Image (cartoon, rainbow, N blue to C red; front, side):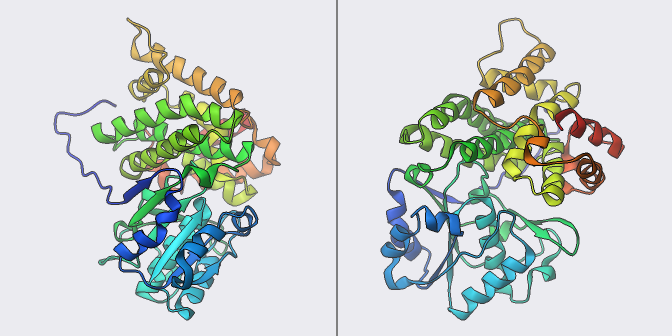
Length: 387
């Protein structure tokens, strides 16, 4: 790991951030700044039931031309196509997503189709676009995915039998509104799962092959914030200071991994999510410490930074000892916040992990893992340790 003498990199983070309690009330002002006049709000039925949409649509008034909410836990190609058709019928020229990762990723796909036409299967690749797409404002209702600032969207393709990764710099959301009140009612399990999603983004950004000084700085501070404030969010969901700091952590972790990429944890989480429908953040949280242990030799200096972020690196401690302390700390932290510890708690069976181990090797995330993964049996061993 470390940095080579010939280090060179590009850092990309164009999204404007608006942060503060009740900042979601500024959505019309920010929409106007982007030239939007007809907005489709993209959300899901759970967000509507929680009463989080009413304030947004009321603020937008007649500028809201429709609400698309037919979005499942893991969005799919067909969902994106349906949402784009809805937005097109309503002559939308801006998309506002209110929700978690599945909602945001659906909106990202819709923005492409509103500009380029066709259906999502026409865009099977990476960096295919050559112009800015339909403007997209994100109002996250979780503190985890970081999708509000990344160029990526993960969309389930049932025909392929796996999750499709769209990576497009021209489709990064133009603006994200981080309003702590939008996460205030998030249940404990979702708070823990999405928080561990953000933690995984930060840790994998530190150990990835393309990591660099800017992403390291973002990832380390994200870990610091999560270590301090995520337990507070679990114990007192109405603590808006803690909620806000967790949101910021998720966003800067998004900038970190959006540039530095992720690794084996995400490859495995994508795969077990596609096969057994384990929520992505929870899959990441269950797998994280075990995958850190797997990568220990190759990523000791990266995990030593994790130990520093947790305040665990003592004077004179070498990288390997600090890295081991980080792995132990991650196991303890996950338990402390009440996060599930085993995939079997989520209904996963032995036959599921056998399929997922094979599928993980074809996931694009695995190529940036610090330890080269040779065989699916190595992945299966990790799965079995957390089954």
